[in-house]
Image (tube, rainbow, N blue to C red):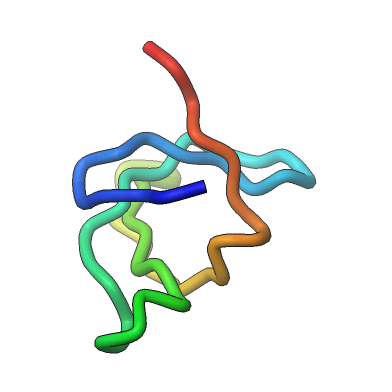
Length: 56
């Protein structure tokens, strides 16, 4: 599955909805995701194989 900046995703194992905010490297094999937890912004990188796109 192809992802782009702005897509809303979730880990396949569950968890909060996250927004793809960028790519960790040029090969796009790691997505930088941003989400809120208790009013704090969180940012982490995930492989695309671990993510599913959330349809609006």
